[in-house]
Length: 307
Image 1 (cartoon, rainbow, N blue to C red):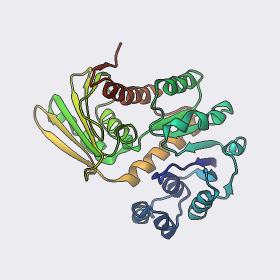
Image 2: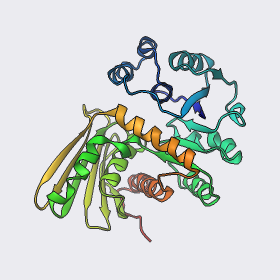
Image 3: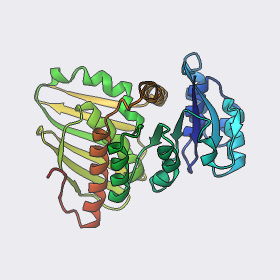
Image 4: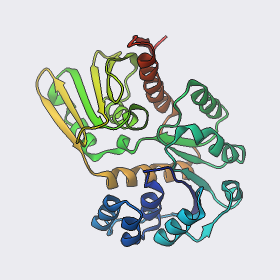
């Protein structure tokens, strides 16, 4: 049994509740609704016949607020609440860092890297070149870790991926979502990169404005992609894929299935002693994410991503 420590949580991010429930196979929907995440309670209820990950259990939890830790623990049957996240070292086999505030990721993951404990790090793993270089160094040191948006495992994208050949030569992908570029653009980046088999991006340019992010990416294979993240629109995450012979619309809605598959891949990585998601793929996505912000900060300059 792989004993997992759960580290959370950041404002508006319910992953410590949902991911602990998916792994441990139990949840209290009323409590999840009480703390403000009714959608999480509803998708867990709709999929309660499949929750639970064989061979793994969340056994320890830490958050910055013991009251929050107690709520998550009681809701998903986590046996141990620790006072300091470092207290998990030596008693867990792996850690899920489920905070999505990337500024905390280096500091919070460092004790576990030093102890040789595998870590899953919520997206985005980094939003600065300095932090990304630090994680690249950990990869070079052969530390076991994994980071991605769960949209890498979206069923909706995988269904269309198997149909791409029928669309002929791909020319254009448009991707639409809401909220901010750094925290939510990474979802769309992950979905597009995975759909296209992680091609090499060559340039990125931010052509939008504050709270209305429009980002243009050119790939080495000739495909061009525009990403649209608007803070105040009503939207799910959607991709439109256009080829010479046909097109497809991808409406990404099944959060539960992508979360579950993501967790399974991390558990398998722990079992195998290496990440099943190559760090080079994560690094390429984060370079694009950061490059778009650099473009915005430099008046829409084109940023080269391939030397």
